[in-house]
Length: 401
Image 1 (cartoon, rainbow, N blue to C red):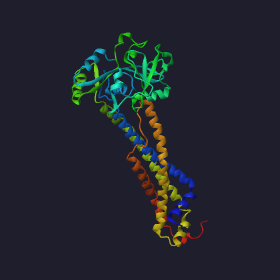
Image 2: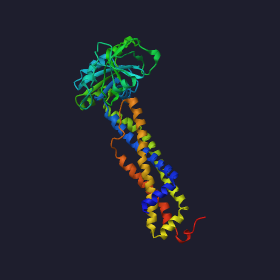
Image 3: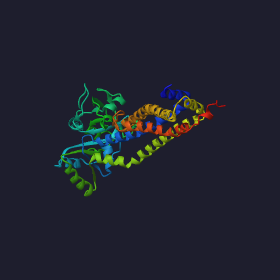
Image 4: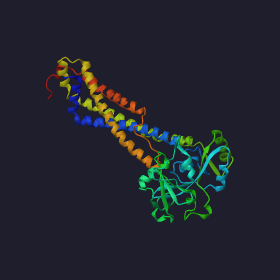
């Protein structure tokens, strides 16, 4: 019988313990891979998402809150910006685009954002990619109660061109806070894999003058999305608005603000990674204890192999190969664990932010995690292999009672 045949026979004899140990390896490797890939992909995705803008101007607040509210649509507005402030900033020589947005209403939990048509028609949500309307639709008329629906929001809400809906007051859905106005869906956005996919876009004036809103704030806006002509303008505006002024906040640059967020929560990634590593150590311990505990009942088999001419190093290699195969099987099944964890996490991220991450996008951990788990399994098999190596032949040839 070949060396591999001996190993497979042993694995079949100890099928239950083999399955449990392989599952432990699969869980450990799946957790480690998920932690690293989700962390890095989410970091790249969020830092890379800026909706085509370099900065956000809003009421006095934290820069992070402004970016999360205006770019990612996941935070409450810190306050209003006067229309006069928008007109002033629009004329700044260092700005190429300044587009206002207004928030404060929703439809069944999905945020309504009031803005000018130029935001959807002229701005690139990713470099070289503009917003496009699916066939059969058109852009909204700023003078009418019309809406363009993001791809993900349209899917979840079941909206299509020609449908009508009533907005609800506030950012959280409350069926008792329905507005009287009726909006008509005139277009559906093609998927952008950005926060815009989960937004219902309506004309700016429509949200400003929605029934139930404060009439004294009918011209106010929530924020101004800004695209700069050159980075130097950002430094000057940061100095003027943030350091010398006290009414408004200039959140710039957007990507660095999001990078700081991930740096602040980096401790959580470390905790998850530590848990995954501990699971890996426990799994390796399972291989060690499982094989070591079977050495007693395998003494006679080992002695017979030695009597038939098998050298000590062959016996050592057999046990080592067995532990490696267990780890290899676990590493293979870990892709299923990883896929389940990643799909669940990516679904939550997309539902909450509109940002899409991809489970099979290449990441270095896809290579080093299975190799490290196989190596760990092999190392775990060294102790029982050494015990098999030193098993005496003569005293173990008699049947074990």
